[in-house]
Length: 347
Image (cartoon, rainbow, N blue to C red):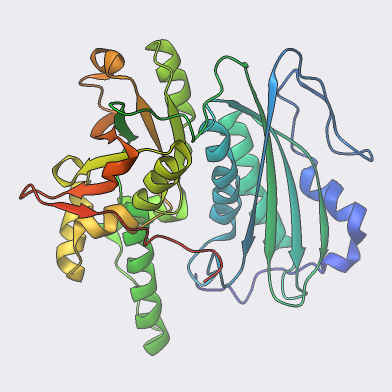
């Protein structure tokens, strides 16, 4: 992201904390009946009748989770919301509210935060969620964003990670690996730019990969799709840390094993061609890439006819007895023990 040296800069200190919050949130409108009071008081007021409440939170830190040299602030705001909404949908729930807390250093003018909140606002509009609170403070280490998402689900519809059963089918939404490869492309272009600031990156052949990294979408549509198909997953998790890591979470918590078939992994053609260009193994990228924000779930075999042939869903394996372990079945028919090589937030 090349900085415009001529852009106007308004110091955040000119507004003060409450003035800043009012300025950044003035365009957010209430969209849910469950939101009684949003931003503007000591606490939000929500009224959710006969529902189980879902609460999830994620902290994103500059230099750890994002790089502003190629991540536009509007995209960052949007993605930060997606990261949280995905966790709600992974519980088979409906997201309805978020809170946003940010810590910023004095290198960020008001205009930069306006861009960040444009992305947050767009996410709220697209996914019909309400911004109901948050906090702002100063930082000495750059930009930090913490978002909490609130949702609800009927008691009989909630889906956990620890309820998969032997003979269940493993199903994944969308395709895998594109977000990780998008990051690799952006990192490569950043290195080229640092050597030659006059060079302009040509990203035309990587549009899908870049979009999956910079502006991912949560799979709200899958929750509705499964309901319409009358399919309730026996377990579910979102794919944020890599497919293999998430499968192992389900296996560990459900006390089961699995067979995952390499030939069944859904890969976009751009993923395959870019893996060849970077001399990377596409299976490794699909298993360990992370940040896809797709949903991984299990269903009983009786429900297979309901999802068969659906373009949004791919059966990639099945659940086995715990004693058999979690395995990748290669194209050659060889079984290899699955290992978690995805994102580690503490590494």
